[in-house]
Length: 315
Length: 280
Image 1 (spheres, rainbow over the protein chains, first blue to last red):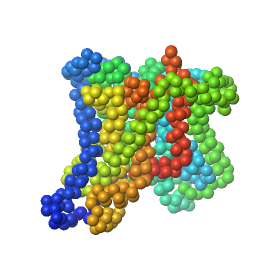
Image 2: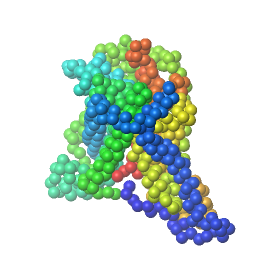
Image 3: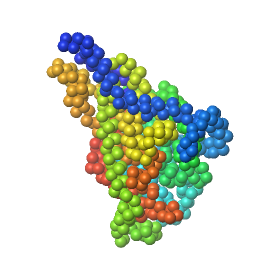
Image 4: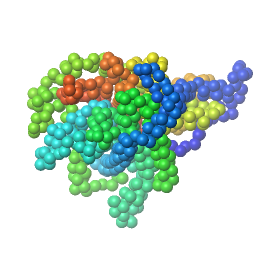
């Protein structure tokens, strides 16, 4: 991933002018072809990424009323409202809980599954398929089924009842709602991280383990001293993907809890959606978008900084 | 790690894997079997692992309550158009960034790459306003244009670039000597070689579009234009409570086709996604 730009085409590096086209020499033509090739992507990024990012700042200084057709400059009103918002603390807390819970459970389970499936064992392909399969099940369908299973009289409590445990009403309890959303999401996508870890594990040379074995190192010690350092770039990558993904969670909340009970599962994107598209506070929605962007940016920068400290090597 | 395991360790491993597989497999099983049960049996105790009296009532009602066939087609055609469009945009841009040299290349690549940092949720309010002013609210255009050209295709471009960077240069050199132009070299040499990367990009682009939920509920309001994820949550009774048998039947119809394709082609799926250059 850190490969420098070696993609220069040797055929054009020292290109000679094309006699039939004195102006469009090979080099000039290459410039033009390059621009033409990237034009759709560049234009798309400009119109659908960069421009909206600039506009979101502009809109956060306005209040837009679709019905009345008014678009009024309100200065920093939305930011003052943000500072005074009694829900903001709860929303940020819920977002933090979800992200931390998701990353910890997801990475731990993905690594555990990958290590288990990396053993010399028949049928690992079958298990790999089973663990990966929720990734391809439609997200809302998967969430609906879990909503069905997690009801007070649903399948999960039915299962618990058979072993004599009286399960709680998972999605309606302050303490269990967020945990439920996290667990549903972990089972949905952990297969993706598992596959990335499996690929990384297969790149760890077997001789290292053999040498460690000779030295009398225990399996657990080998795992911490050999496996973890050698796959640390993958751990970093999956953690970045998982954190950024966790901040975008929306459908699961909308289907399972609608942010409740209270505000216990109202994560930032769900709150943004409520404010902008249910209450039609578009200006405030834009302000919350900026908060979201700030968090994503800060986390990404922090993770790249961490890379220097704990990633063992970079391929 | 290719050390042999003792029979006891193997047994423990199999046991652990089987237990762990339950939460991955059981929900889908429960979804399909429950969709075939009469409502009264759905909450029967003890739970019925197989429907005692299987029936397709719920499946008929799915189509009575909503234009579900139309919604299915909407999701399917949007996902296909987005996939083909993303492949075209990302392959061209990825190729240019990897193998053509032009002025400002690195800066432009960084500009494009910035899209990876900006979740589409951040830009949903301005995008809504842009499409509102263009009169494109309650059309499929936002669901097609934004994924193909906006932030979601940036990852695709990045993956294609990584792949093209690793292609040996001699092939293109030979093509040049044979008098092939840039586009012909791309189309006839590089693109056919990049099939694994194209496959991976196609899979995750399709799934991404198929799963999209926030954007459809923001941009669409007419049931005939809904996509599947959005339609699934609309099967509610007069009090807003979910009609479980109908919801589960609709969910089964949404989930199963992709699941079946996956089981048939799981090797390509998993390896494609694992080798997209995302490997650290």
